[in-house]
Image: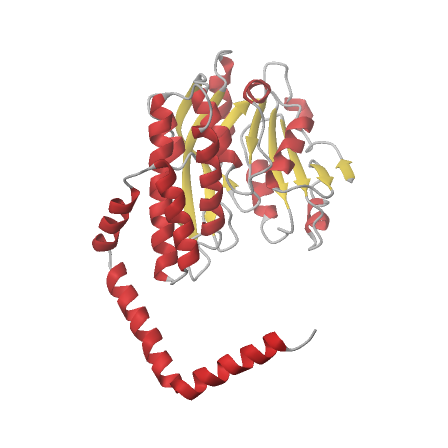
Length: 351
């Protein structure tokens, strides 16, 4: 494990006063040399001090550490970890700030927003502050264009949006003491631990403030774990959602409205994934999600049938089946017999 801390930016200590709380920004990193510089610069361009920026690197080998060395104000820890959420937990243990934020290597903070974020924390009962977020997509010219906006929820619908919507975890800042009260991140998740944390936060009914300020910019690309247009990690994410909903629904004393939202989430996700895999003729995966949906929703089958008729799935399946049948006929009986014979001889061949 490597530890490096080379001090703060010139002039930052001159601005440090006891009346301004230290803000800790934690960034998990692994082989993101092409992106992390922009994230770091978005912190440097803030209108607030003091700030400590902690990078928890998983042992990058792509030049990330060389790039980080160009920023002497960073606190960098590099070494093996058990994934992104393990890195966030390590960062929490090192953080000295009263206020904590989490920045992904491929995302950005909006310009000069920290003053607006820190101001509500002057009220000692405020445990978190939430701002607006936007999702950016790069065009063919490389220019980033906003394609979606996420507005922070009111306390009345926080639980519903956290379960069924997009909680925009990174647009939140938290009082560090909150993690001592409701716990840190579950490292058994690769994708869903931030949603798990936000559900626990919503169930705890914490006191938080909202700001209309645009705080966070998610950058959509193929390697993003958060906003991935190509659905690269979709099946894994939805499997973790099943684990998440299953865990919460088995807890004693869970409020009834939480049960309703979690069951809706499970039904929605399993319907989506059963359809997704059925269109690809991945019947085993489709049946897995169907079975998981039925476990908590006896009305799942008619909902799925209705979903099939509301989409072009039936037509698509018929075309795929027709294509498969045509290929089967084209191969001819001799081709099929030959393949069976080859398989049989391989099976009977002594080891």
